[in-house]
Image 1: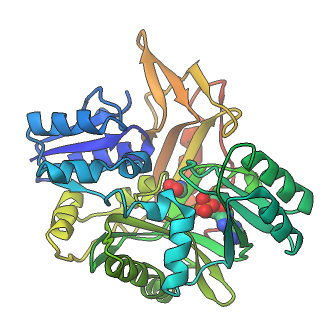
Image 2: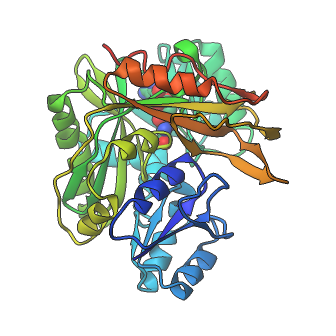
Amino acid sequence: MKVLIVGKGGREHAIAWKSAQSNLVSEVFIAPGNVGMSEGTLVPINDDDIEGLANFAEKEKIDLTIVGPENALALGIVDEFEKRGLKIFGPSKLASQIESSKDFAKKIMKKYNIPTAKSETFDNKENAIDYIKTKSIPIVIKEDGLKAGKGVTVAFTQDEALETLESIFSVPNKVVIEEYLEGFEFSLIAVVNGDIVVPLEVAQDHKRVFDGDKGANTGGMGVYSPVKKINKFIVDEAINKIIKPTLKGMKSDGIPFKGFLFAGVMLTDVGVKTIEFNARLGDPEAEVILPRLKTDFIKLILNVLDNKSIPLEWDERHAVAVVMASKNYPESSTIGAEIKIPDDIDAKIFHMGTKMENGILKTNGGRVLALMSYGETLSEAKQKAYENVDKIECAKLFYRTDIASKGEM
Ligand code: AMP
Ligand code: GLY
């Protein structure tokens, strides 16, 4: 069968790579993809050109489309494809609000008693400021809407909180202000369709830009899986208290969810609490979870689309992925710096933001490469990933040096 992957980052590279390994797949197309994705044919249609993508899928007789990024979902790619009778895996425009609107997600969580941080939503700066003044710090301020993981500020002083509000309300806006949760954060992604829930293995991302979890929030600077501290009981608790009741609630509200439901979860002293939902696979989470999945990925998706659950088989090895990002990310990105990848690389390189110019590989975005290595132990996987990161030559890239360091806890 012919599969189309929508998107252009590291997550989509991992999806394309995994899809190409499926016995069911004869051809993989990626729109628009990037130059590193040699596993498929690149199609020059942007991931926000919903009409163009649907036209391509019709013309090329694509059997299954898998959507990577949230913007395509929020634009209604799934609704358009399904209207035309095209098979696609992802949530509808309405259901993808679970990610695209923090306020929508909070309302669902409040209505269905899903554990999460206490919060209030404001569309008026003065009211938000008055509220902040009554609260203790740290306090968390989340801009509504899609922000590529960058719309969240954890303010450690009142001044920082007030400055953040000034900046957010420099244009008409909506914010969710919530209590700060302390604990161990992990990413739990389930492949779902209505009542069918197939959880993937847990991963832990590193959201802050610098070592020691310092600096601004990013889309994710590195990741590892499995996560020893998050045992089966904790996963079950998150599935039963977060994933399942959210799906049930959305269904009873007439907004059933199909696709990858991603919960950012904090394991606190009083149990699991939801930090956020995403309506897609994580990036870089996909770059360690899919390499560990032994079950045919396309078979999994087809079964779930068909309302059938299947047991999953996992590679017991540890996987660590280290992100190499443009200096200055997440504030800005370097475009066009030369990258040299030597032949003796012994890691899977997922391209997040690269391009080719006159035969020279160059940076093309904030996050540029994710290097994934396996190991019999976490420290072996980590060591291998970093040995390979050190072999990449590019004057404009940086990376965190402490990915997976909480993994032995
Ligand atoms: P989000 O985009 O909502 O996942 O937020 C980005 C990151 O900010 C999360 O991955 C957490 O590390 C942090 N964060 C968000 N909300 C909270 C919270 N209520 N308490 C503590 N940290 C938070
Ligand atoms: N790495 C977190 C995300 O994909 O949102």
